Amino acid sequence: MCITTALPIALFYTLTVFAECRFAHAVDLVDMERTHLIGVALFFTGLAGNLYHHYLLSNLRKADEKEYKIPTGGLFELVAAPHYLFELLGWLGAALVGQHPVHAFVFASMTFYLADRSVAQSTWNRGKFGARYPATRKHLVPYIF
Image (cartoon, rainbow, N blue to C red):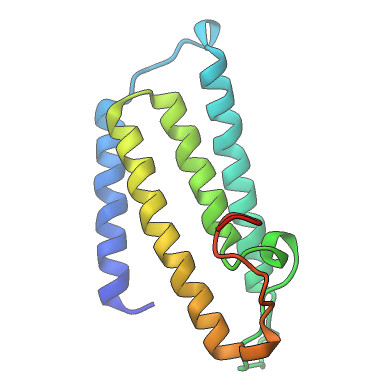
């Protein structure tokens, strides 16, 4: 990843963490609402799914291989960027737990950003792999987008 891509992403995440910490509120475990529990479940599902799909990506090629390969396994059979989908689940979970407009804004902005990135990934994959790339594979959300 080049510095012109990495720097804005790092800055965005830094500002996001600052805002999340600044506006977060403590939730007493005894008083947790159903929304908080769903948010926690979504957050950890997002983390696990993101990790799993990054694991699949990291094992596409052997150390001595240089050729790009079409990702397979998990939700890669249905979408170009399942790791983005799971990242969004994590952000949605954080927004449900935080219950503050800043959290909703972060989730919305990440949705637009990662949706755009998933379209770019699909476009690159189709250009790189041509007819070998599954024509029915969506960008981000299985069967929909």
